[in-house]
Length: 395
Image 1 (cartoon, one colour):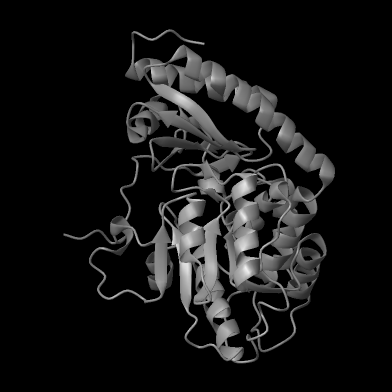
Image 2: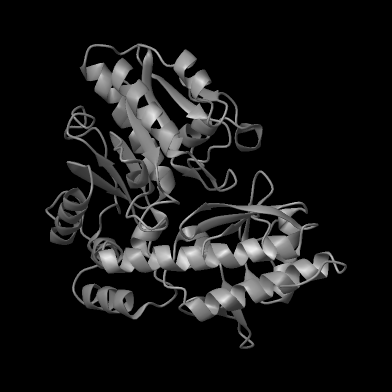
């Protein structure tokens, strides 16, 4: 008999009834150190007092009003995002998948309005994850994502990840846009180099193609900058944002330049819940906190500490780990064992991690994780690795 909850997840035998900062607490009181943060969602930790206050204040005033009307909280968050980024305009959604759909529509509508409706091809990369809608899975193109779903949305082409020669050969005056994660998350915590990002930007400029950056997982302070592309000194034309911007509340946003968004006029897109007062009030508080230079400096300091400790963990368990990759507090332990096995071993040590492709174990803690919690995380990861390979030494 099918469960009442559609069984599309292979769920762990764990459930939680409370969260505090970097910790999740089960019904029996067991505390788990959370290095997944809802897959980079709880950027400020669980039950963050600032977000609880923002939510409570707005919840007592107004939760939802249609986008048929002006929404002051939405306008405030849009103004903040434009002030702090490359963007000239913002559309709010409820999820990262929804941002992918609008990014695709926006890029193709741009060329339609320019008199080139045939210019629809979007170049993407192997290992990408842009969401689970039909458009997003067509962009990713992997068999795992598309098998069994019938004809896919046409106009997408996947290139080998980080293969700039392949991109240079493929991009042309028929290319609508290049769509890429600044750092692949589901694909294994694989960052594009600054040089690669600069080359992608240059190739787009040469051909007129729009650059769509997916920063759903790597954005909102996770790498020690407000958005990961800032490290390379480039800007996109369209950017997908979600996860961390809501701090746990469903919220996403598509940021765009005036040029890229020029085709999106009244009636071309919409959302019932996107940009609702409750979500935007919380998002504005998240952005206020995360964009503070002092906060980002702390993310970078803690990221360096965490990485140093993880390098020691790798050295102590050469039969379990191969290395560390990533940026900021978006880190991946490259494993010689199945990452899913290490996740399960972590449950016994009361630590939560997330597996990914390309033999990576994702570590995506709240950006508010403390030094003591970093030390405790490495201790528990060490115990999990030891359980998988008892002959290895410990840190």
